[in-house]
Length: 196
Image 1: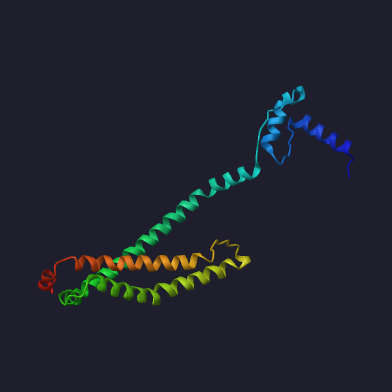
Image 2: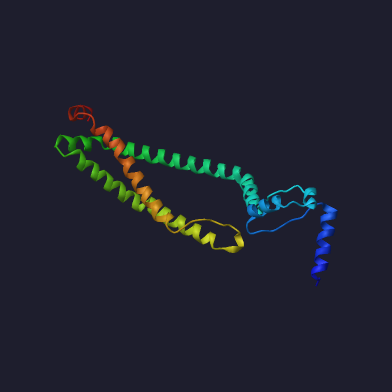
């Protein structure tokens, strides 16, 4: 235990030896302003610096992890792009293989809107037994791994991310399923009949 005088002596000794004096404040900017306004010759030996440690730590962390974040983002974008291309071409080949069926629907006078609806429903059913289980299983695995403290893996995966991801997948699949069908149905029925 040290008396107040002992603490002041240690402080003065540190200031004398290291030419440094650290001041903690709840309002650093205001404290710096007040210290600069004090007309004291003893303060002239110090070069005043305002440092907020947590801001500097955040900057250092961001600088150290920028490369990792960029790499992760690029990998994620590449995986999503490849997945979308695969889904698009799968649906496109499915639509092309069923072009005769689309031709018959068109020649029978079934509206394009009804055909689009049927393809969207078909895609929703297909997504429900392929992508939906994959999303749910992957989410469960991520949550399980994130809850094991010994692994030291901190995963930020909020509860609302799962329904949002499922909704996005359904919307994207619905849009992608319409594109090849639209391209086929945009041709006149006579052209489709000749091709068939």
